[in-house]
Length: 209
Figure 1 (cartoon, helix red, strand yellow):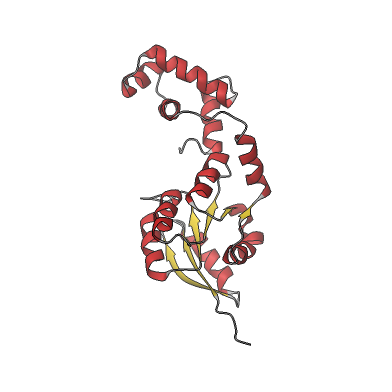
Figure 2 (cartoon, one colour):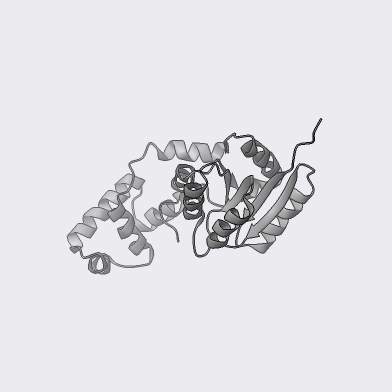
């Protein structure tokens, strides 16, 4: 019988220690080989074009271009690309964006030790992988009404410590309109103040702080 070629893996992450850990785990497997590393989104896109890996491990938050944008670009050129998101964030909005962009798996970095190798093999076989806590977050998030783009912009400025008057000036709105948006934001996120709203939005991936 002809031996199957090893699974060719690329890892894209801006933390050298994580890349080293992934490289060490892959190097210890007889059925895998690390073909390349990238430290940001631009390098990930260039690396995919150069190495054409079987499976790509992609950090969600990277300099220059984030993981979702990099996935979108890669998948537009290579629709069959099999990409696993690696992240510390399990927010439903972040996960949904990544999956819609074409990621086949969404893996929390806290679980890499026990799930990384299995996930690589599953994705290489064409299977999707979604951890229970991420799936649960997506299911709960689907029950809530999404913030509009304008509401996200208002909350993003609020997260930076801006008062309603300054937010209104920045967005070309009246202060009353900003107050109306903020009231809607609190209701949709089911919180009572803007500080809690920012915290919930950041946890869910609505805001990138």
